[in-house]
Image 1 (cartoon, rainbow, N blue to C red):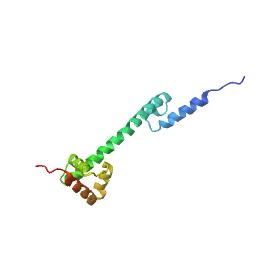
Image 2 (cartoon, rainbow, N blue to C red; image 1 turned 120 degrees about the vertical axis):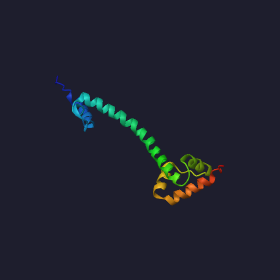
Image 3 (cartoon, one colour; image 1 turned 135 degrees about the vertical axis):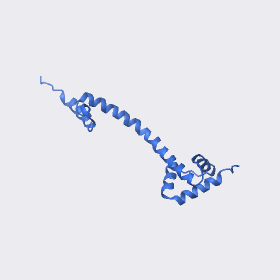
Image 4 (cartoon, rainbow, N blue to C red; image 1 turned 30 degrees about the horizontal axis):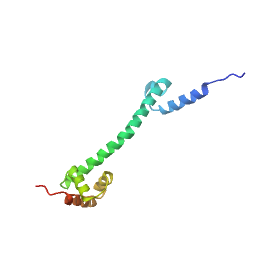
Length: 121
């Protein structure tokens, strides 16, 4: 019976892990045990932060909108309330882009939102 050498599969697996550990410091980049732990943890962080990125970007849009509508005499919450009352359905991403690149169009939207709000005493 022929001799079976079994290193090929594990070597390929190790190469894949070490390639993913490129750029890590110390033993984490070239020792398979340390690299595997580091790569596994980095994948967990990457998965978690793909979700968190969506939150962070939405928060940025809201901050931009708040700054833009305050210049026009409203707060963010009153602006969103006015938008919903006036029936304007534009998402925060588009509103943020309008505030930056098309200030006149954004101002028109803010005026419509203001008009839809009840008068405060």
